[in-house]
Amino acid sequence: MNRTVVVFMMSFLLICTTQVTATGASPVLITEVGTVSPDFIEIQNVYQTTADTSGWVVALNDGVVASVNNVHPILWYLPDSIGPGEILYRDDSTWGNDIVWPSSGPNWAMIVDDQGNIADFVSWKYGEAELGLLSVTINGFPITLGDAWTGPSFNPAGIGAGRSFQRHGESDGNTAADWVVAEWSMGTKNENLTVPFVPEPSTLALLGMGAVGLFTYAWRKRRRR
Image (cartoon, rainbow, N blue to C red; front, side, top):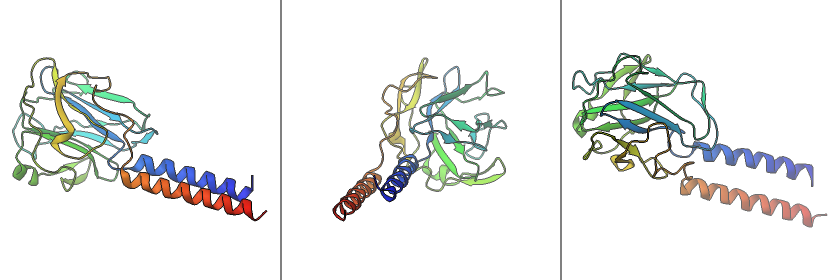
């Protein structure tokens, strides 16, 4: 095969991989939260490539005082990378101190990347007005909610012993609709969560156009011989 075509194909495949990985939300998301003994939080890399999480932290709303701007004094510093589909979690015994989440809230949890951006966020039982007042400092970065969450908090109706609220579906909408109450599955993939996440339609269209372009280029090169 012509060397130019080979180089073009390799470059296109690299772009494809990058686009699929970067589609939509962060590759690492909060996937499960437990508020009935034990309190816990679970995260997962929902993409098909290793995620660079150097400098990322997980922060929790401290349930001792019901205030949207009260941050738990302990942060979870993530490892430098998280593999495809890999699941990590911490509970009361491994967080470093009691998480102290009332079973029905209100509370929140978030992942903050090494640039101070909210990589993921989930809130339960806070009102929209209260979320709009969120303004905290995490890992040295000033944090406000912005577009990391839209609409009302998740309402964990039906929460109780042996149950948690869990992410489901195949994409992240940054809304309460991403979450359901179910039998807790800490440390294993949620039953109704599809991973790796499906690329958004815009990304699929981009990849399709790239494939057509590659085919056309190769066909023209072949005709010139």
